[in-house]
Structure formats: structure tokens, C-alpha cells
Image (cartoon, rainbow, N blue to C red; front, side, top):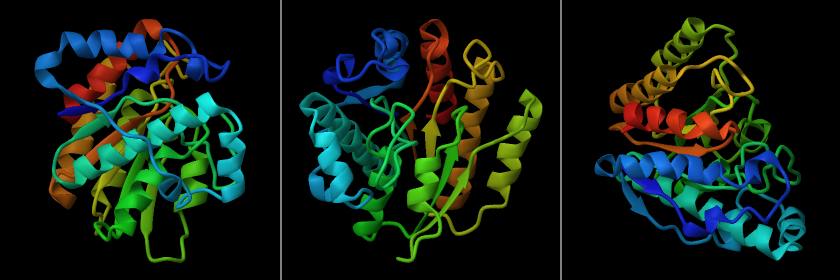
Length: 257
């Protein structure tokens, strides 16, 4: 399994919010590096403005460009998402350890610590390249990815996207909801996860244990193998308790790989 990562993601100076807090990336990398036999780390390049504009308006792009460091890191995160999607399409399960996150960024606006919609930019790149016509997104972040929905649902260009933001309030029901939804999927070309870990039992959501994240990864693997030759990738979104963030992220990757 491949992990998309760039040393620049350690830089916490692009914003003053929990997603930019010092130590967030370190908490994940420290654990992933202890399991190096399971992962191959690869470095992304920034997304181009042309790639970003497939998901966003020029006005929004120019708004982000006003802050040079923010634009640099947000473009690099989007580029990491594109690389993860391209590797997944080729058959390599990939997790993009990127920041800023993206699932609250809509075409012409953003909030919730997000700036560019990494998921939309990556999937629209594959669609533009005529590699896919459909996708399924499991957004298991505590907060519904409204940007994913706003950009990718109900499109008029023929690109079909299904999105599940699970809403169940118990661990067993949550996992059951995910599996039942995946069982119903038809004609999906790639699986993707907006992988937020703030639903964790020791994070804001106070719900999912590490073994639940492993099972989410296993479900992504099993049903992607049934539906689309195992094409699957995941992008980091939320998760704010640094003491458990790396544990939960690695737990997901162990099931996903």
C-alpha cells in the first residue's frame, strides 16, 4: 500500500485552526513509520490551476491565492489527492496523508478548515482523463462533507457519484449502515474515502474504536474488489486528538491495504 506524503505538510503556519495544529501530522507519521514494512511513501506534486478549476471557480482560486503559503499547501494537498486517485485507478490502494483537508470546500466557498476540495479535484481529474464515469465516496468524518456533495452530486456532465455520510449512533449500526450501502452499489468505477477520524471514541464524536476503523478499511477493500477490481483510495480529512489520531489512521490503513 502506498502513502502519499510531503515534508511540507509538517508546516503548521498556513492557518490557526485544529486541522493546522502542530503535531497533527506527526501523530500519524510516527505510527505509520513504525509500520514501514506495510507502506511505501511517495511524494506528490502540486495540482495545477487547470486541475483546481475543474472543481472551483476562478474567484475562489484567486481568493486562496491571496495567501501564498496557504495556496502552496492547499495546491500540494490537491496534487496529493490526484496522485492517490491515479494510483488507485491503476490498482494500488493508496492513502493520501495531506493537509489542508477539503471536504467542506464547495466550488465558490469554503469553511471547516478546508480550502480546496481535494476529493472533487482528484475524481474530476480521472473523469476528465476518461478513466472513470462513476465513483463512490464513503465520508466517515464526523461532519458531513457538504463540499463533496455540492460539487459532485447531481452533475450534468455525465459523471455519477454516490456519497455516504453514515449517521448511525452506535458502533454496530454504523458499520452495518456502511456495509448495507456498499452492498447496494452498482456500476461504480472507483471507491474513495474522505477519511476523517474525529468520529473516534476519544475524539469529538466519541463513537468509533480503532477496530471499527480497521473494519471500515476492510469493507472498502472487500466491496471495491467486488465492484471495480479493488480500485480504492482515501484522503485525510478530520481527526484532532493527537494521542489517538495516528492509532486510528493506521488501524484504517491496516484494513484498507
